[in-house]
Length: 117
Image (cartoon, rainbow, N blue to C red):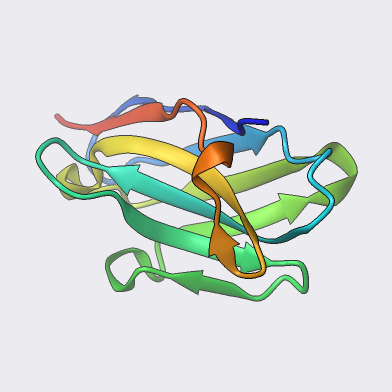
């Protein structure tokens, strides 16, 4: 099972985008959901994560601008991004963790977010 991210695009600095992630419904042992990103020439980094209790954690550089949420009924995890900056440009991926450890086999194709004027 690979989670599918969507909702990326081209946006001007200061703009907003909401990413969506589906595909985790059949993975019954998930403990956390997360959004990662990878910019050209850089390592993949965890941007935001949420656990089953709804407790979220964020990369320092996105705190106050990004919000992760989960709609269990619709098997969807969202990443709301506002006040986007050029340094947010990257391919964004969603993933799921079991026992708190994100599983590479669940990482699907990402969605490109480009912040540029």
